[in-house]
Image 1 (cartoon, rainbow, N blue to C red):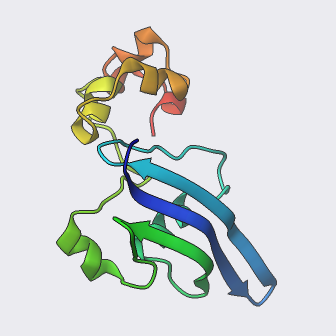
Image 2: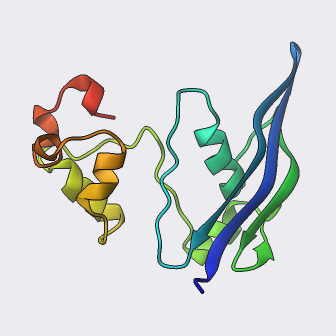
Length: 144
């Protein structure tokens, strides 16, 4: 049985604004197995960045983690902050990450995960031709 290095259980991150309560992340749960990579994809505004920022302890006011657990190697890290991550080599790639133009999408992804396959890129809608084309040659909609 695979060991989970990261467990997010029922994460709730809300923003208390003058206009009212915004439930940016509401009851999100997932696991990441040791040695694996997780990509979070979804529509604009669905909570991908806030989920990642919550895990990293980087949610700023008026946002606040209102519930759930974030377990890294079994330890609840929800309140530990950025210093914990710096000392434990935990990181994530932001959605505004720019691909290196002179490389292919596959080569770019393999910089982050050496074991990534074309299947990973197919899952986000790229064709074989697009996967093997230099990023500079992709249309604006195919680039980040």
